[in-house]
Amino acid sequence: CVSSRARSSTGQCKGAEFFAKAAIQGHVQSRSNLGCIEVKKGNTDRALRHFLILAKMGHEDSVEVIKKAFMIGKATKEQYAEALEGYKDAVEEMKNSDRDEAKRVLGHQKQRFPRKK
Image: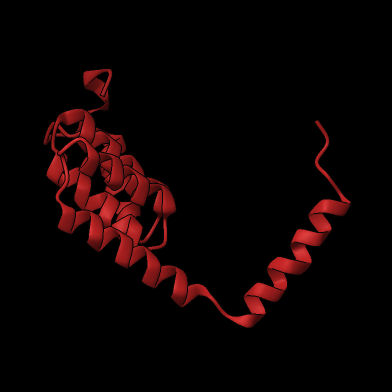
């Protein structure tokens, strides 16, 4: 936190409290923010746990974070393998023919109506 006014009675940043509540309810960006906060605090193990949960939710960027942590020796091979497996399982769970058809149709529409700059 930047100022002491933004701290709760426990000394924790109010933002982190809100992120924690949202993360418990499944909010992906809040969980990612918590992971980043823990990295800044130097709590690598806690940060990796947040990113592992995200990977198991199908968040691809979290797998990359864990991969980078593994490459610099901050994460174990087992943690990286668990992240990859969890990500793969989440992506597989989300696949179905209706979703693939919708993606195909919507992808086609995006090409027809590009965003204005």
